[in-house]
Image (tube, rainbow, N blue to C red; front, side, top):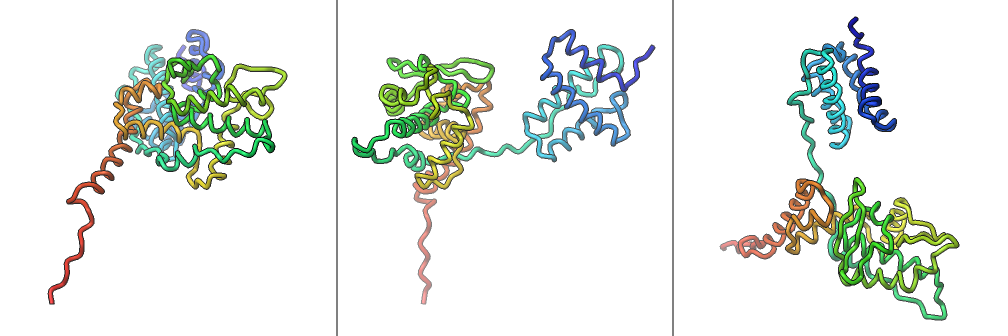
Length: 317
């Protein structure tokens, strides 16, 4: 007996759960994507049995027009490919309409980066108070913030990597950090002398003032001695930048963009930057070359004698 089309989705999800062993959260993601597809097809008078490649492409196009990210569109496509491949193998469909189907092209926005002057403004510590007026905990928070920004900018870490950093991840002899990126992949990142010095000062002389009765080996702690959260880092950066008169919208990932761009502008090769950022694909890192090209163009226009602003010619009398 042929299975009704309305049961195909349930059959596919059962297959993913029983035979592929996918988690309940992953299954919910698949189900959500495919229910959106079925709802779209129903509006067009189609279903999983009658839809064609063009219907699927138009579905992705509508999703793009609604502002879905490139990541979301890619996931929708992967989900559809999984479904129609399954239906084809089960002989519920004679074809696979997702063959040669691709997501609509998205125009990539170039990330905004901080100027070197703005970075220096953010990393300029306030004048230290007189010793008699020192509030140890307040000073500890100040030094934590400075060390945190030095590490974000100096190593290009993601905020998740920053808050999960442990004391044993720092190699002061080799001047490197071990961080855990996406997929729990570890990588070794060099850290500059200035950033390492500030980090060492914080760990040696100030971090103990933040420790609670339940000590932890995490590097960055909040005022209660607990591990700093990603939201906590965001709030700290916002307040820190306002106090220093920086008008840019400061967030943790902007330091990662700035780290990569400044390295390329000062002569680093793309492969090295890719490795330091922990990008699996160099194409992800290449977005920063567009930014450094703009920098080179600015330098060229300022420096080349044929690009300088020409003086106005005097009118002949």
